[in-house]
Amino acid sequence: MRKVEITSFNANWAQMFKEEAKQFQDIFGSDMLAIHHIGSTSVPGLKAKPIIDIMPVVNDIDAVDHFNKEMEKIGYEPKGEFGIAGRRYFRKGEVERTHHVHFFQAGHSDIKRHLAFRDYLRAHHDVADMYGELKESLAKRFLDNMDAYIEGKEPFVLEWEKKALIWYDAK
Image (cartoon, rainbow, N blue to C red; front, side, top):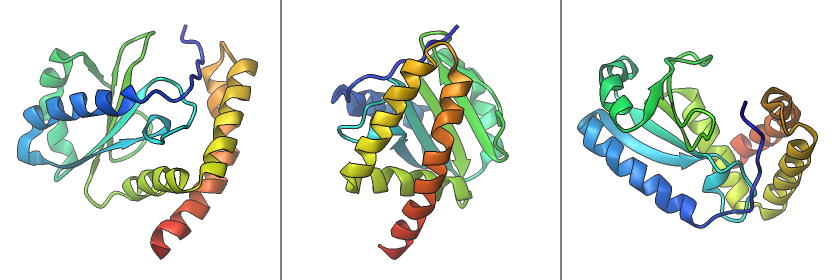
């Protein structure tokens, strides 16, 4: 069973992202249009689960399925859409999870949502601090219940995502 673990920000997370991004570039080549470090590990100073979230953007989401074997060779488990239409999700590490990868086709609305929330937290340290404190509190309450932890964060994330999208569009 996975435990909910929140740690202080680790400056090595950016390097961990770069290392994986290089491997994805080698595998996907020109099929990959962009790759973004998203999630809490991409926000300097933010407390986070020590799992690197990566969002590659591709021309054709269905083409990603043709690379499942190559992704498995570098330690990733393909999970298909995994609850989000138009996404291809991969995870690395079973119990000791280290990376989550969310492939989207260019133009998918979740790309903007992820980038807006990330950039908003990077620019608004007070909100990032509130988010970190909430996550730490929820992790203590729900150490053995990842679903309850995620559910506990949801109202905060939904509220601030809306504000982040308005802010992002106004930039």
